[in-house]
Image 1 (tube, rainbow, N blue to C red):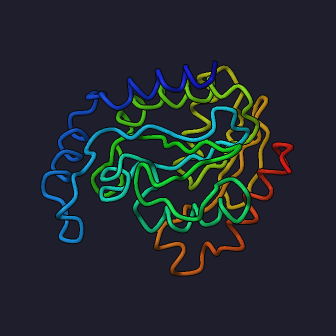
Image 2: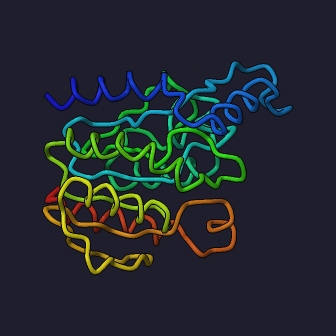
Length: 228
């Protein structure tokens, strides 16, 4: 069963200490906090993926935000990127509500699963290559466990690269390597890989990524996955 396999992967992720630099950083952030969250207890551990075990669409990010997923324990939860992302997922029918603020807030995904290449918040949002490589087997196992998966939406070039590395490890041919771009679409093995600019504040505040652009990506994902 996909759910049982995903639960097993989750249990391994949340206790991982494989990358000393990331362990030190995530725990330091959780201890020191920031003023606006000073009264909250931080998660301060690796953040697993979450969503529908029968998902046909995987939404892939870079890593948890220091005061987002690293605080709340759920990827893209409690930060501005997540606000932008989940509002779009709600508009396009993948989420039952437009907000994602904390574990237990009632959020439910339908037909979608959200994950990341790296599971710990990295300093300056930049994991080292060896830290990426230690973490990628979790993503590979998630992809393999999502038996209905058809489409992978890569949020940014880092996620695009991580998806390709994972698919190569699972035996798919990724040569020549497809180039990332917003709305780029490539067939890799049995999957469709869609590129999307990351919903970072830098991209959304400057208009590089708009609500219409993001909604269009998820509508395309629905179509490619055979979802209504």
